[in-house]
Length: 161
Image 1 (cartoon, one colour):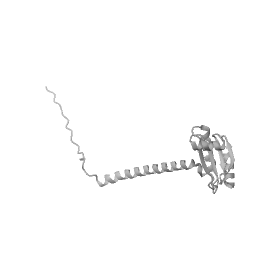
Image 2: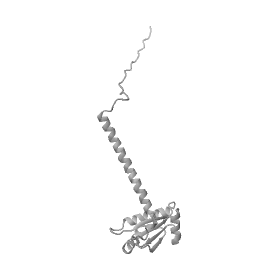
Image 3: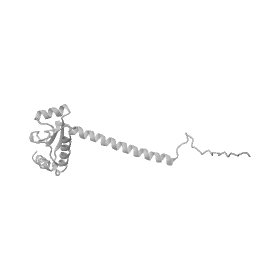
Image 4: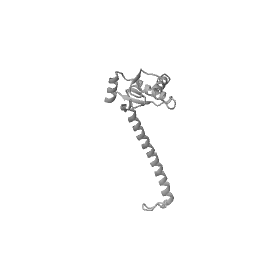
């Protein structure tokens, strides 16, 4: 006897043609994803621009003596002690009361401007220099400090600067 073989016949499934226009529902669905993508990318771009502007302003040492007291950290970004001091300084500044305006600036010793600034005041990295609003040096804090130890000096500068 001969064996019978059964062939499976595959039914062709309907595929939309490549040039078939999208339905209104599909179009609106895709538009929603596009709008969400634009919002995410726009938000990331805005954050990036603001971050860069903040970093540039923080490194602008010409702001010293412009009427607002300033704290300048002589800083090496590759130094862990400098990075720890920067974190503690920011924490202490956030603890200042309302109406106590103080600028926080960074003199990066890996740039010519930062090196020149450190040389001008004869200080190494891991140092905070406190200037009054007229640009006169009021106090020098050398070495690492915790936020609780920095806060009274910053408050004094804000009151009398």
